Length: 459
Image 1: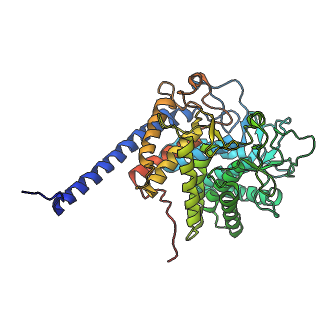
Image 2: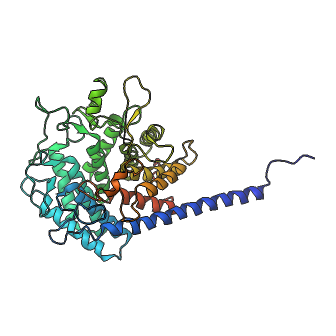
Image 3: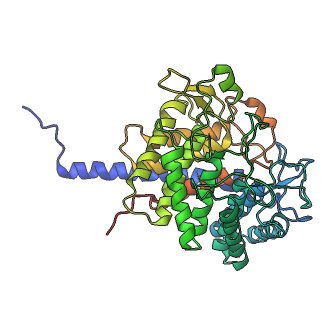
């Protein structure tokens, strides 16, 4: 007697229900873990400890145990990132009063100290009291002004404060006047105090990036303009945001699926590929594959397209997926999880060689966020993004979160155990990357409709 291997419909329905229930339970379990990490291992260590109640703004530097460091300079990037994070915390925890108090400290310091009333734009670096540090070679940057806009727009969105929005608008128009390139599009990164783009000359070292355009300022201008567009539907802002999206997607992303780090004014790549290994290694900071930036940018491009309301934008999703897949295929640690810090396409190689196998904190945070987005967009993809998301979360718990003192180490301790005693905060390290990632992931695990970055279709 032969039995059919096909289950009857009621059994199939029951199996499907059990599978869906198991997946839902797993997502909620992960969401609870992440929520606990946000509240008990991260944000509670940063705030209110970072509030500078003496001079305003935020204390930037903390030792490994979150004791304040001796030197406390303030950079527009980190001060604005603190303001952005606190603005999102106001939305998440509206009853926690000190987040509102702390955000006001940042708004006032950025408005009164970082904004240059004489020349416009945000200064790059100040001392703790708010005095300009004169020997800084780049007085202002597009990158720094982007983050000023980013924090101000988020604060306006959270509180409705009109002054924050007005200053964000002024910064946007200052960039338009001084940094925007009307010939080739995009923005010049390095600027003088009066906003004049700094140019390269015969004395400029090949190790210096002054005069180049770059992916990093471009993607964070895109990020900032996307945040601003959500509270200010200005036609020029929309045009510039869409223009940045297309430049990043169509010019900065290379055919293989990675971002070229630095570029000439006309977006020609700055590459040392034909100069030999010694020269390539010498110029690593200017020319390599940064897998962390690639996975971060995939998310930022899809977010920008979604917020702008672009329709039938299949190309952005195709390129974004290509970038994530390239990072997973060439820059992912299959054994423990985590994205490596750097690779390079040496001549004759079809795949990039890993030239820096450390794993910095921000790349792992951005990778976690993007992997979950990809998992929900492409649940049946052979790369199995959700399994990699879970592996990444395990990696972060084991190698980045300091379960004794709180916060995140600046790099994975599987590769750099010495970082357990390194600073938890400095002018380049706040809670922005990891809070954004964990906040997005927790909300998305509970509700897949959160941050549902699907391609919009014409009705």
